[in-house]
Length: 143
Image 1 (cartoon, one colour):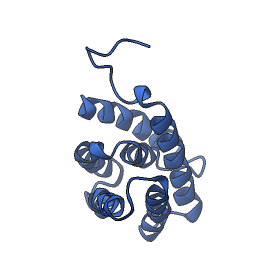
Image 2 (image 1 turned 180 degrees about the vertical axis):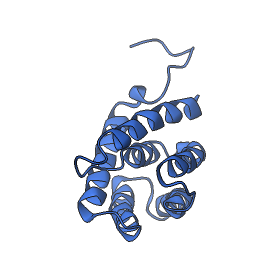
Image 3 (image 1 turned 120 degrees about the horizontal axis):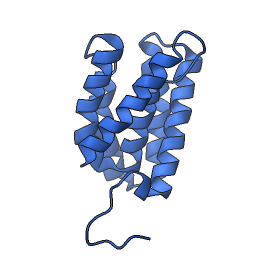
Image 4 (image 1 turned 90 degrees about the horizontal axis):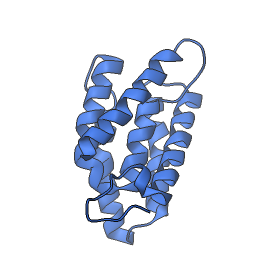
């Protein structure tokens, strides 16, 4: 179920990237959505990597532009959580590291910072309201 959810999140992000690409400086919407999902629920890491591969193939026609970040981010997050326990400072380190990676790939600094801010927004929304991301379980009553 999580894979369909992340693929459904990939499509609007790609649509927004393609729609506004020539007119304004914009974030990488799909990367922000995927990073927000990873920060909110670390167990989505197995689903985020294939969706990130699809994103990179569709946006850059190559697998490797952001793949190093997407392969190392779950490992880095798990390592940081093991050192200091699960918490928001570890996630802030990852959100701060992402614009550096995108800037290194040739993005403008403003687009990299916008992507980080959007990832922070999606992380906050999904951490506070997990029902917006997670499907209802059959045994769980509706609110």
